[in-house]
Amino acid sequence: MDNLTVSAVNVEDNGQGNAVKPPYIEPLKRDRDNTSVVQRRLNEQSVQLCVTDLPDGDSRAIYKNVSMDFFNYRHIKMFMSVHGPTVQDNEVSGFLRLGTDFDQNFYEIEVPLKVTHPEATEFANNNRDDRAIQAVWPDQNSIDFDLDELYALKAERDREGFPLGELYPRAGPKIVGKHKIRIYGRPDLSQVN
Image (cartoon, rainbow, N blue to C red; front, side, top):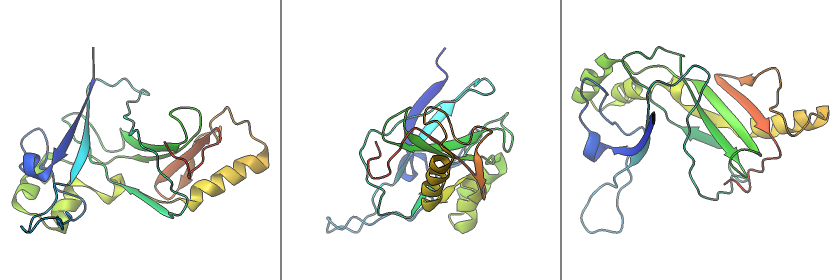
């Protein structure tokens, strides 16, 4: 049985919430289309993952197949929202892997997720201010991370002579604020795939 579906959501197609999910409210301001003489905003979108009946301890992920060079960047930010009739706060975690391949060389940044409750739908349907954005995209759910922490984790692991073929730290992720971070293999942020 397939328990993962992937789609795109945006304010133009998903601007009204319902009993199942809140409206799509863009977490960042939409850019203006400077290539057109007509004043209009670009249709900012997000990826939506719908997972059902996920066994405890299991995970689902999607991969974005692009090459990026993060070497000159200091910070990474990603917004997440979770909702569902049986999901509880901190029961589900969101994670971001940055690496030179899918499963052998990566950094992992994880945060436990707070549920967007049904009452947020009514509020967000009637408001489009910062409070509505916070109701749908709680700060707790965002990855807002200084990349220097990943470099420091790699240096710490290398100083200890820890094996590259195991997740570091072995005892569990290192806690940095609300984030949990780990490293596997020899990832390179100048060659992220």
